[in-house]
Each structure stands twice: as C-alpha cells, then as structure tokens.
Image 1: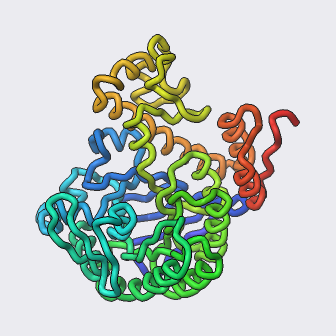
Image 2: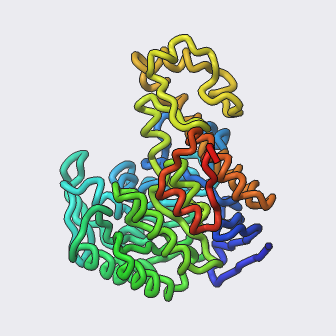
Image 3: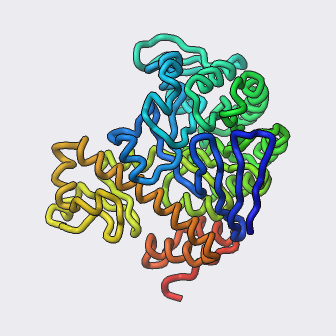
Length: 401
C-alpha cells in the first residue's frame, strides 16, 4: 500500500509506504529531513545528548532529536539560540529537531512548579528565579529555537494520579491548544503537534481525541503515559488513541523507550517515539542488546572479550569489548557511559529500521515473534504484551508449543 498524504501544512507531508494490520511504515517529510518511520528520537534536552557529539548521533542513524524548551530557555536562552540561527545552527545538527513544550517539567520538576489557567509557574532549580511559561511564551520560545516539530503546551499530570485533577488537566490542555495555535508565528516551516491527554480514563481520552482532532494540526501526540502506570492500561490507551487519530497525520507516543513497549506501540500504529531511557540506563552501566539487558558493571564482564551485542554493527561493538567498557564503568563513568549510550541509541534506531523493513517486506508478524523470542527465550512473554500484539493481529506462540 502506498499513499501520499498532503495537508494544508506545507511543512509536513506524510507518505504511507506499507501497512500491516495497525502498524505502518511511513516517510514523514519535514523541513530538515524526510524521516523514515517508525523511528526512535534520542533526547538532547539542552541541545546535546549527554556525552555524544552530533557526528556520533548521525553515525547512530538518529533522524530527529529532541530539545527541551524549558531547559533551553534557562540556558542559553531563546534570544541566544535565535541569534545563532536557531538550534540547528547552534548545535551543528543538520537533521530534524522536535522541541518539547516544557509541559513535562510540571511532573519532573513538580516541587518547583505550580499550574494555573494562565500557565505554569516555575522556580528555576538552577538559580531560584521565577518563570511563567504560558502557551504563548512556550510557542514564542519554540519559534526562536526553530525546530521542525514543536509541541503544544499541555497540562501534564503523572499517569498514576487519579481523581478530578485528570479531567481538569485534559480540559485545560484543550483550551491551551487554541492559544498555542494563535501564537504560532511560523506554521510555514514549523509543525505544531497537539497532545492527547486524559490519563488512564478512556472516556476522558475519547473526549480529548474528539476535540483535539477537530484542529487541523500537522500531527498529534499521545501524552501522559510511561509514568509508572500498569502496562495493561498503557497499551489500551495507546490503542484507543491510534484508532481515532487521523491516518494522514504522524502519530507520536511521548516518553516510550523500552524495546518491548516500542514494538507493541509500533504494532498498534504509532510512528514516532522518544525517551531518555537509552542514555539514562547507560549511565548505570546497562546496555540494550537483542536478548534483553546486559549489566556491563557485572564482574562477569571483566574477562568477556565479546562486543556488547554480537552482530551489532555500531562503532562501539566494532571497536570495543565488554571487558574494556566494564573496566571504565567503575572509575571513569563518563567514558563508559558515553560508549554505552552510543550503542544503546544505535540499538534502538536499528530496531526501528528493522521493524520498518519487516513492514515493507510484508513479514512484520514474523519479525515481532522473532524479537519477542530473543527477549524471552523461555517463551514467558508478559501477558499484557501477548494481549496487545493479539489485538493488532499478531499471535505469539510459546517457545514450548
């Protein structure tokens, strides 16, 4: 199946190349890159993925990276980034950039923030100065930063929160999207994505989906997940959202980075993902490999002269052994973390490109079964994943069957 979906927003064009059940392979044409999806986007909060250069990110096949509006506004500041010609020039990155609106800091910096109808009030964790991030200010900053995709400011609540606060946040998110649209000064070369909220409440999600998709935005994100909720709730909300989001627009699930979670979401029809997980877990000495997780700090690695992931073609696996990286992790965390981070990002981008190839070659269900059997060689698949894949038309057979 091929389809070329053009909307009124010239800065984004979605080309659907293959479909298998709910999953799809697309090319999302953005100002700085034609991104092949499904894709994983590394998080570079302040214009850098910790420990990596832009050349290394290109080597790892990152197509789009994230920047964070709140943190970039604190340092170096929107005016400084704009004076340099935008974040692409500032960090010497030729490919795509997506900027988070700063809304997530309502959760990650909860003790430094409070929310009102006007916006989010922050106290800087750096120097204690006050900052009011309104929908208008978030968009102004993102226009200065110049990312290919910019996110609407939403009222973000942890996925484990229950009660009336969830409904309040969902309705405020809908009110704020209109303020973001009105403030957006660069729709010709920056794509404003709306974010679907509503917590784990299917009725609230349905309301937000119906209202958000009435806005003719270039793309939509599924927000408010990956915050510690049960996986059974997680996949059902993702499925509910992909069922109702427009097929001709990119679909982005925010904050998802565990390999099994990624494959479930791809099977459910999501195109784009981001997460700090590959870099954060690297700093704890853990590598992502095709059979799961590799604890590089373990004493068992001290005389293991294999690469992190045999068969991996990344520069780390081609040049360094587990024993060498193990020797760095206790006393030189920065170098060890850098090498594992580079590998982990390369692993996730390769995983996505393999899923895409399987879609294009009409063998996606077999690819998923092979992936899951490598992750769970005893066939003890998580029940939630079995059910999620089944809902997408992919049955996982037991290793013993």
